[in-house]
Image 1: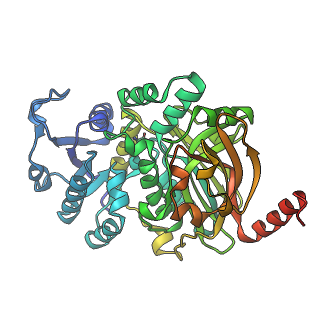
Image 2: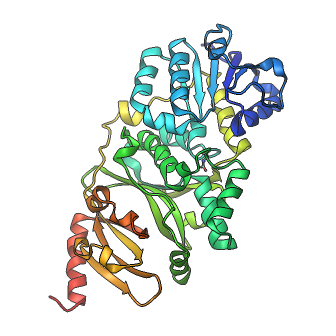
Image 3: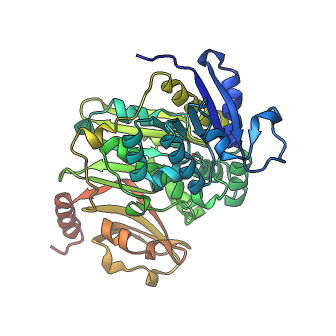
Length: 418
Ligand code: HSE
């Protein structure tokens, strides 16, 4: 078997992650991996590396037979897909950190890996420094993985922490996240939940064999969260986090979504602050396990890219076990969610679409209610994202059908209706 093969790298991108990787590789001579050429868009920009390394010609890297590894850390998803597919077709292994590109082209990328037999690794694309993909892929057997609950976007977590623990306003917190290199070049991708749902799509593939596009998953970001919502959270001893969740249901399918959520103090995710990410896995016999680490930033992301590069020495490839070797799971909308909704005007809230409402707070400046909605109601409508309305899931928000009937009966009894 060919081991410890010499790795000659062609690097695309020299931004926060690319430059981080360049420095990290210089400090890891034992890896015997060297960058031969770096492809960038703007040749006139001053770079902290010898000018002779840089080019603007993609093909100088993609057609160089000596380069056997392409590392791609650019943020243009279309260009990234072109680079990755050409590299795989040219017989090169590829390491990528482009979550948007992977989420949008997952099916094509799966086919390309089958056709070419090359490795395509992307540990850095989700939760940066936390080795979550390899763990989901290698460690957890399909049937044992009951649920995953995670914070997968560093910028929004950073913003929520700075706003609610340190009193910064949204704008200040976002600018800081940008200055520190956590945010996407278009920060809307972070703030409105696109980045988190992109990451969730392929984490669901490695966890459950699900190959859904980002448009098939219910999601929102933190753009609607208001100071009053944080006040409610505090009064209940809770915090608000943007949480990606997947849960196996009694029908054998999986419910998945990415939404802001109230988190109890004793929840592991309450511990996750600033640009850190966290993943809580609940499995058959181990009960809960908690993965924690930096989810954004130059070196934490470069560390995951480095680990993928190191894995190529041993021809490591994702097998997509849950997709190819098990019966893959399907997504299910067959659940109900317990939600908190705050609003300016009750007339803009379709009260009759709630299964029931269990709390009303109509006297505060910012009015709110707590009630139960079907997943489909949220998936198929936008009222909960409009007119200054904000929706936050309650802790343990998922209610399955049978459970719903029992809870409904109880709530009606309490209300004296039955
Ligand atoms: N903008 C991303 C985040 C970078 O904040 O999580 C890491 O993927």
